[in-house]
Structures are given as C-alpha cells and as structure tokens.
Length: 178
Image (cartoon, rainbow, N blue to C red; front, side, top):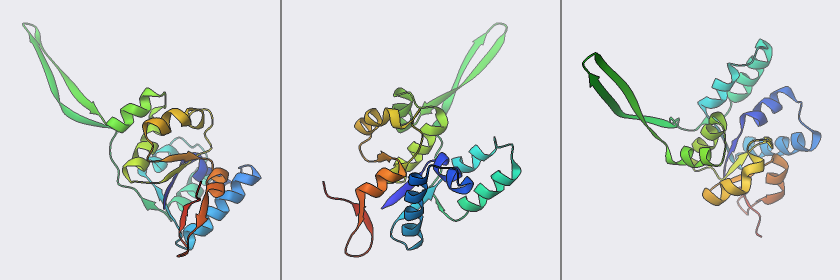
C-alpha cells in the first residue's frame, strides 16, 4: 500500500506538536514503513512549503525527516500549451496559454487551494491508496466531494488510517474488510 502524508502531517511529526492520538497513529504508520509493510511517499511540494518557515532549526528538522522518504514523480499542475499572439498597428501582445491538469482542475472545482491540490494530485498520479492529512479546514471538510470525484484515493487522518488498515498474511498493510 502506498501512502502520501500531507505537509501538515510531516511537519507535525518533526515538531512533535500533534494531539497524542494522531502522534501515536503516526508512530505506528512509521513503524510499518520502517518494517517495509507500506510505502510512504512525499514530493517536492513538501520542500517548497518549507520556504515559508522563518525558524531555520524547524526547517532543517523537517528537511532531515523528509530525506528518509521516497519522492513521487513531480508533475506540474499546469502545462504550457502554446501562446496567443495579438497584433495591432501599435505593436503586439503575447499571452501564454496553459492547460490545467485534469485532476488539479477537478480539485480546484471543490475549493482546494493550490498547494493542497498539488499534493493530492501528485498522490493520485503516483497511485497512492491513502492521503494522510490533519487539515480539517481545507481538505477533510471536502472529503466527500473529493472522494466522489476521485475514488481511487482515501483522505484520512492518521488515526482513521490505523483503524481501517490491517496486516495481511504476508505482513503488508491492506484495507480492513468492510
């Protein structure tokens, strides 16, 4: 099983400032990862979000934590599709034309902001089974709409993930049967 933790999850692990139940669930998830029972994936977006941190020590602590995980392939949420040229007697104007990634476009349609959309889009493109987040204001309150449009991924808090996952006979993490 492939799992993509949101930036708020990874920074919370490094800071150790999460509520106890979520931190305990994350410790269990990390144990499973270290025992090769599941894959944890991150992206360049995690590092980009660190640029806004004023606290250098906190930034370095999170970078060290991130260095231990596999990166998903990076894909931009837009692609340059060409240019539009408009010429008049006074001169010309050139406008770039962008094509939005279909997954990103769908997520923007439910009201996600660009960083959250990009994280989730990358997780879906990397065929992750779960997206772990503690973002109740932006992501989890839109969970139903997102999962309806993009049913290939589950949006979960770490505690929810632990309650829905079990180990199979081979010792790999799978979804608990309904």
